[in-house]
Image 1 (cartoon, rainbow, N blue to C red):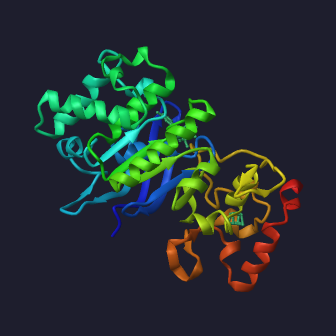
Image 2 (cartoon, rainbow, N blue to C red; image 1 turned 45 degrees about the vertical axis):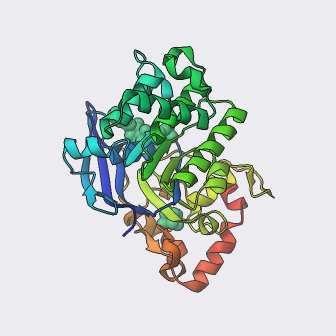
Length: 346
Ligand SMILES: Nc1ncnc2c1ncn2[C@@H]1O[C@H](COP(=O)(O)OP(=O)(O)OP(=O)(O)O)[C@@H](O)[C@H]1O
Ligand code: SF4
Ligand SMILES: [Mg+2]
């Protein structure tokens, strides 16, 4: 049992044009003190998955299957089905979220201080004076001048707002922090500073973290484990050193190849051709079939299940028929996987 166990999770959006299968049968776990990175192209379901953990999906979004078990020292709660009261207790205190845009996440009509104090007082019987003192300390910790406590969100720059958001997310020392592209809107220097701050605070608090980012180098530097999503499914999951150094899934390889620097290694940049599947009508076979240089006839008919690699050690799993067909084929596959010309042929 890990801190968070997500099992067979499926999420659907209803629209006027029909339903969208945004997340399909996803299972993974996040351990104590672990940082788990979630990567994948735009629209593959990352934010939908993160929002479902706190049940903050938009009104047309619904968990149609699966469980999200948060296993705390004194109790376990299935966040997918639990009641609103329990969810309210859990938010900020046990699970908090650093959203992509702090402007949307912070309330424009209250000062930063009022919002952090409120978050503290909902969960703790603390005087306003004490909660304000703590808020000032928190702002200082995240690199924001404590005098900013009485500023309204619109009086702060994007970087300052993001820092205020982080202070709020960490105020109650949650067990799990969800960070959905926490620095995307910021310049590169501020991004680096803020990521460092999130990381060191996370370590100090002993929290676990789910971080969603488009920046593969951030994942390589900060995460213990990574999940690769494609077309609403998890196609590869495991420790960073396995998934990023010896990727087994063709999509993971394609994703890594699209980035210039992984641990200083030089690669030719290769862009994957084609586009992800239409989630309003997901394919019956492998979701990567249309773009895969290694596809076989069977891949169009059957959906490959996530299968353990490395004899099941380290919970490394890949959803691909070709890379799981036995040692010899796997070795051949790994060689061909590195043959980047295959991508160019598509
Ligand atoms: N409220 C909604 N109603 C209908 N469809 C939605 C809604 N929100 C998201 N979707 C669809 O669900 C799928 C997953 O979206 P999601 O925002 O989770 O992707 P993402 O991986 O976070 O993408 P990005 O990297 O761009 O943030 C997409 O096809 C998206 O168009
Ligand atoms: S199952 Fe087939 S189509 Fe899917 S990634 Fe593997 S080789 Fe490619
Ligand atoms: Mg998103």
